[in-house]
Length: 239
Image (cartoon, rainbow, N blue to C red):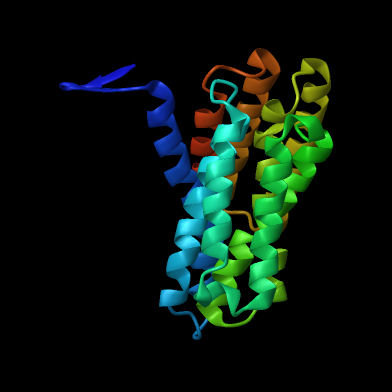
């Protein structure tokens, strides 16, 4: 329980709110910042339903990966995301509709324990889905087309998901250490490929620090909050 004056809030509710906001920003950050360099970039009403969709998806991720919250609650937020995907503004773009529905369907699969998708395979699919659905939709709606150059710039975002969320998808600590080493190395390599300036160096230092933390501590109680804050900082530095 967290007390703010006379107001008492459950810790999970506060964490849900913070995680949802930061993860939503992470989903939009690369597309908005890179897309603004194009003359065609503009904000339109078409992006408003996508904001609601992103918030619903981010909330679903927190609920699914937080062991303290029953995963069935995520079905509500997943249903809300589907509703936003079917709004007239998005639904008329059939490619975007299928793209966003792919994300919602995968979150549903993750939310059902019977499917057993909270493993390394699930981590890889999760990273790919989160990298190439919402950010791609944001860029497309902002510029009215999709740039292959933009897709090639999403390497650090993809590997940040694969690296930072390793402890959330497996409890096998020894194997996690190896997976963290591999995905962390890929993240650093993708940063090297994109650029080498003070922001990139700072990002690499953060990745190395997080890797040592994962090796020493494994999955901590506040892992999801640490993960989303670190990913937010990395996106701010790299894009």
